[in-house]
Length: 378
Ligand code: GLA
Image 1 (cartoon, rainbow, N blue to C red):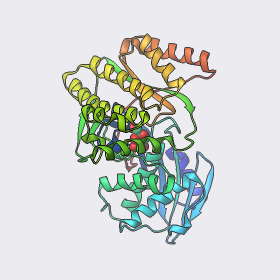
Image 2: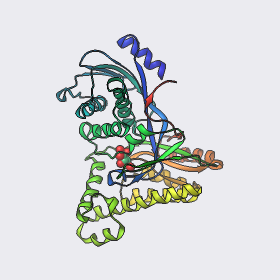
Image 3: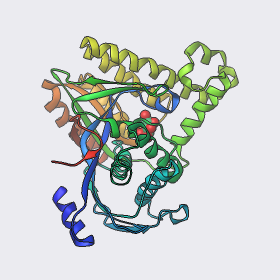
Image 4: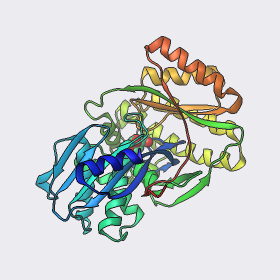
């Protein structure tokens, strides 16, 4: 990938720039909790977006996406927003840096990636974090701190891409560290690295390769439900709510809002239970909580789909320790905690049965927990 990016950079712009990369992410548990002030448990992975970038001495950005085979050119004022969806991520990052008083000048860039698109592995956060990190290094002497880099990516989603996401993906992409998951408290923003090396187990992603269209922004709708319930309870976020409080207003909210909040409140407890279980090396409990999360995401939060439920059922039938939808939902991957001896039989069976049912094979990715945003020096 590096060589190809550099060759194309030389071809399009002449000479070479500086290489930067940032990673996609997994999340062990804690889904749809970030925008509710709860806990998440992500890690960066060895799949990245990589960009070769060089200031060009003008006020224009010229950027080429190898994977989409598209070129965009735009200025740095609000009215210069490009049409192409992919270019809006980069434009958004530039604008969000400027809004915070940071410097961005014109630059040339070529980028590519191996984070699968639409798989729930946060390719968009990887793209945002890669450019946020790079523009901080190239134009701001690295003065913007890492939390702000993550927020720049998140605000890009909010203000230029229409997704009212939480902070998890950008946080994981910027803060990721090889071999470590991170537990982040999305209310206080305190975080802790957890070395993750579950002896005798593997983490495997099964990508359904389906992406259900997010018409009417169901993600944003979920968030609105949660905010309505929090407002009704008089708390800032559902982090400050418990089951008893929710029951006490059950008759005053819609059945749908009730189910959404019920999931979020349960999920908060599950993340903490998983942390305790990890500290004890109790992977059976970790796995059981993953199944509970899947059930909640499917039945109460309603962000699953038949393909993901099928993957989860096959995992359960085969005695896989834990399995659940990962990320926002509506397609993409399940994350599975599998005993080493079950790995090959599980992968073989799940690929075969999914193919028989849905007419295409799911993609299998082994998870390697890796570093986040960085200058690429390999
Ligand atoms: C998407 C969002 C995140 C988070 C997850 C669900 O990945 O970008 O902020 O809300 O969904 O946990």
